[in-house]
Amino acid sequence: MKKYLKSFLVLLSSFILILSMNSCKDSDESGDENAEKDDGSTVILNVYNWGEYISDGFEGSMDVNREFEKYYYELTGKKVKVNYTTYATNEDMYSKLKSGAGSYDIVIPSDYMIQKMISEDMLIPFGAQTIPNYVNIDEQFKNVYYDPDNMYSVPYTYGMVGIIYNEQLVDPEDYERQSWDLLWDEKYRGKILQFNNPRDAFGSAMYLLSLDINSTDREVWNKALDKLKMQKPLIQAYVNDEIFNKMTTASAAIAPYFAGDFVTMAYTNEDLKFYYPKEGTNLFFDSMCIPKSSKNVDIAKEYINFMLTEEVAVENAIYIGYASPNKLVVKNEYYIESMGETAMDILYSASPKDLNAEYNALYGTTCYESFSPDIQLYVNTLWESLKTENSTELWIHVTTIAIVVSVFALYGYSTYTKKKRSRHYRIKK
Image (cartoon, rainbow, N blue to C red; front, side, top):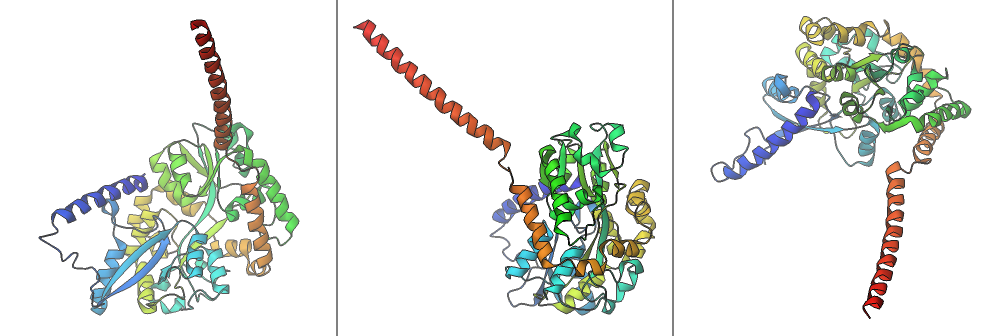
């Protein structure tokens, strides 16, 4: 919906802006009055977040980062400029921070990655309790397994994984089973998508097989791998963000994805429907953190505090579409009206009543403490083996065959031509 239109408009606007800058270069070389000054009077706050994961002023929405700059100036009399960049996966973000390729003041990873970054001393323990608006976070989202003392993170969004299907392309008797097995249905070969990450892909197989997703037994993971191998011939592609476009354009019929994204996707394609699989599913939290690379910890904390104010949190929740852990958001009438009954039901009513208990039971601290780096490495190795096994793409096979056929055809044509020319020459003689 708005995400792809927005990308086009941004590109168009950028092109027009470049033309305008070139035409006005002689008359105005001062640039934006809010831009960073050479004397360093403007502090740069580097925020690293998922794509399309903050209200940014599109279609009349609040431009949260620009509003923070105004808010901070009014609060302190000092200028700050938010330098906002995005990443596609937790792993991309982690790799960049780990390698030292980027210095950031705010990052918003998912639960398991936050735990990993804490264990590797990559985050600053700022203490969520020191953030005044932290009182707006519902109690059930505090003291979770990855940050039991609320020292390193403040919840931003949460949600659950489910199955999105196109009711025009999937038979009722199949989606009415409300099961993960829809992703393994031979009937929909070539129309099924799967996550391009081991956490959620393995999760779909393990829930279907009633396996422990926190198991430290390699044989358990091997069973899940076997199930994913059975699925692989049916898969159109392993994707993440591309699920949005493929499902809204009906180029795929079935995909696992996050409930919050479905809310946005359904506005684009009314044929898309959603269910939480009866066998169980993954829960996730994304939280705001301050990495060790931060050079502006106090401003970063003020940014987090600003994000927890009711108006800002509501704008973000509406724009993003995911469930909010901020209790002011859930009670906000404008938010409820904007989201609509179906979205509210999927995001809140259909999810567990006690997220904290459900979450810790699912990913409990004991389980994750015993989920050793060796097992994590083993799972990643299994995932890579799945992706690379017989992974030569069909187009490569087709191209190879076409080249071989072309070579033989060219050889045959060349031979025929030579013979024809020789015969023609002999006749002429």
